[in-house]
Image (cartoon, rainbow, N blue to C red):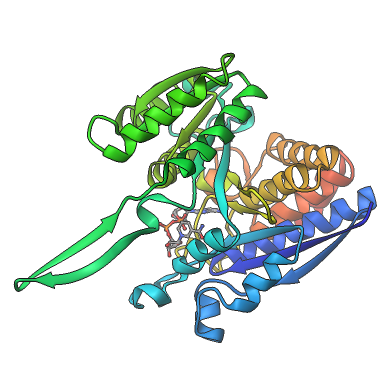
Length: 371
Ligand code: NAD
């Protein structure tokens, strides 16, 4: 296998801690399966503001444009909360999505049987849940212009614009239909068509496209109902597709099915350049530096990278299996702690996954080293 170039953008807070863990796991996979992964590091977010005066320096964009895939930790933190809009860490995140044309964010949600007690939901509700949220990532309220504060006739006002081209809706909905074809052939299109003009067009495009995917069942669901259905009966979903902000909110909600934000990975796909892989969580300033962040969302994002960008299916599945076996063996970071289970730090969790990758019984050996 040839060399694969990976850009790593750790970002801020726990982004750095979990990105370090994912790189460790990728190095182990590289050795085990004889692949050469070459890692190059770039600045993004708050640290990039401090060092370069910009949340997304041009060097970082150039780096990402010249690799096979990008791994991103998370950005943000209270230090930069009062900065003007252009100097907010989150701006770096939005800009990298736009620069790499990452229009589709794929967020798989499946329950792990060994974590069923970690979810605030009842066991019988979360059992065998397996769906994917397809979130539009480069349009909608987070990008529309005008956006900002102003004063008119002495009165302060604020505006955010929800803007989508028909074609932008078509391409994300196409991604969802294609994904459904490889799964259980059901698409739930989430919108607010009873109120929003953008949602009415979204629904029209979904119906148009469904004629090209006759095997796929299309259903429409209003976003408020979808928020409720995710908790009431998450097993009903196969592929959920929705616009940027609705997808952002619904996927955080969906993380409670698995038990923690620290468990859910994502892939951001583009039509042309490299894809980007990142956990769905943020930089978690409340736990940053404490060595308690759950690295699994980031590790599983790296596994998605192997599968989607490098077609290394066996390698990706080896990571998933290693994570499952560590959880099944009873090890947990604090966010998914359960009575009677062993709490481990971020580094310990990474070491455990590495050990499980290498050989099944190594988990016991490695933990005795920590005892
Ligand atoms: P957050 O996702 O960072 O944290 C929400 C809660 O979940 C916190 O209590 C945190 O401790 C916990 N949590 C998140 N990831 C965890 C993990 N891996 N292990 C254990 N616990 C975890 O969201 P927030 O607190 O609303 O935002 C914090 C900062 O992150 C803000 O600056 C926000 O703008 C930014 N943010 C960045 C991204 C991103 O980089 N993709 C996404 C969301 C928020």
